Length: 329
Image 1 (tube, rainbow, N blue to C red):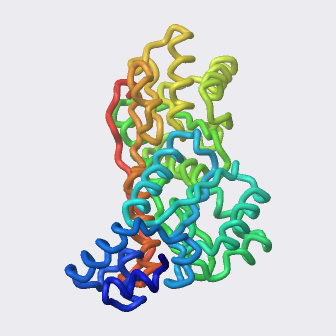
Image 2 (tube, rainbow, N blue to C red; image 1 turned 180 degrees about the vertical axis):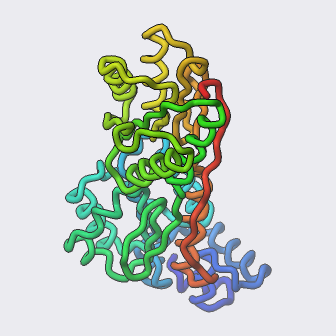
């Protein structure tokens, strides 16, 4: 039984069967039910390739992220996959490790599979996608960057104002009376650099001293947070507030502060970023910045679907994060 037989038995055209199979809305409800009844009767399951040949769409999108084990990326990718699945698309999820060669490899696979669109999750792709071999692969494929931006044809962005988010943390600590603030910069992505600039701008607005001397480079990890605080203590620096670019690093900072006999938040206030599970399992729970990964994911899906199906007006957008009060600041 093929699509021609289905159309004949249902008394409709082949294109109508195709529209039903691809969940198009321009089919009368009684016609849709008649076609679906015939499909169910014969347990018809078209191959993705055959369906793609008829509809000029494989109903497939590729989602490239850095590391699915990282909670922030996991939350974003999970929401994207679930929402595309609900809309009738299959999702090819790829972990690139933030490496250019891995990104190129997965993009080649996506092009070979004739995917309908691509979502890139993470600001690391801002830099990676400027490589000539990457640019040549992207071509005219509809693409959305979740918290990233590249200059490519049919490319749009759902951005988070990370500098503003870190500014919220600084303002919160200043209102608490903190005057000796340090920022733990634990990554070197576009997003991380914007966070760092947000810290420096907010400190300047508050009239506090320090500048880049108050930015400590470390790793994004529990150990990275511990080492950064130990460095401040070892060098005899005075500090009463620590702003972190990630929750996991902030949890390490809290641990190190408490280990040296100081109280959080009475002696040293600490803020994280991402509103992740790390913020809730930290003791006390972190005051953190919610950069709304689920909202970023939903808007990315909506934007890419509009690009693929050409159904709505579409444009890039920016989301403002919010502070979530915990017990560390």
